[in-house]
Length: 339
View 1 (cartoon, rainbow, N blue to C red):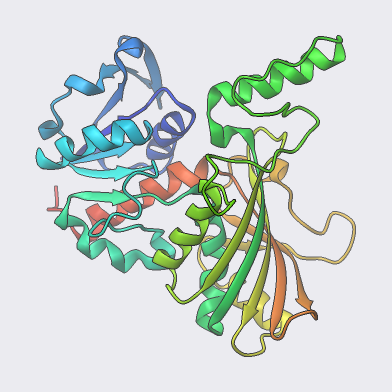
View 2 (view 1 turned 90 degrees about the horizontal axis):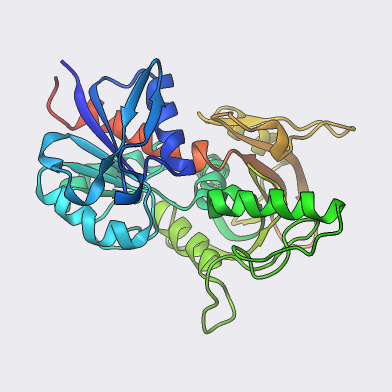
């Protein structure tokens, strides 16, 4: 006898990846429910060799399931997650709505898995921002090696992070430019094809965007509130895979060799760092990969005790679906009643 699992937002990019990841990792589930909005009811989604018929998330009885993986946006998470939690279901939410809520653990299992111990306060666990997950995976072994004082990061984020329609917009604009069609902007503030846009989410009063604020606030909640973080988040014309240029200032000196060794020994991180052509990893190469990849580790001589590195990951996998499924795996292994 296994667990019963619901995936809310199952028809979206991340929802479909959650289903794929549950099946690939042979999650101990007796039954999987695919949930979405009423307009998707009746659609069929693949789950291994089975087909799941999409049900209406708004009317679903969450008392029938043990865990619900949510990837349906902040508005749905705000209203539906507490109802599911009150019905006895543990919610793992991929939206930003619950991440900074007191009493809600914000978890990357390899980094701060012990934070799960407090999940029962609200029966809601938050999945961090995709770029935050990727960065703290690289930072955690370094912070354990020598405390980090400050991080400055510039991201190169793929359009899949903005959803399926954003991916369609990149494809259509790219195709249209070759036949002299004017690019149509609907999902992005500027043309995304053959361009980069230094604007993800809404602007805040200090000139930062909410995406940049998320990286700062979430990193401090997950890793250490004393770390100063400054982010610039940029959307690039790549379909899947985020990259980050990360500059780190430590309290004490850390050599390149020490940093590489610490990250190589950390679960979920791969170091591919050769100072030659093709001796680094790019987003195109990590699609479908579970690990976060680190390259270009080098000394920064412009600050005391500084290092720089290049970090790449599949934002739909470890940046979203895989991290949520790993949280669910920890729940059934350590916290939920055995079935």
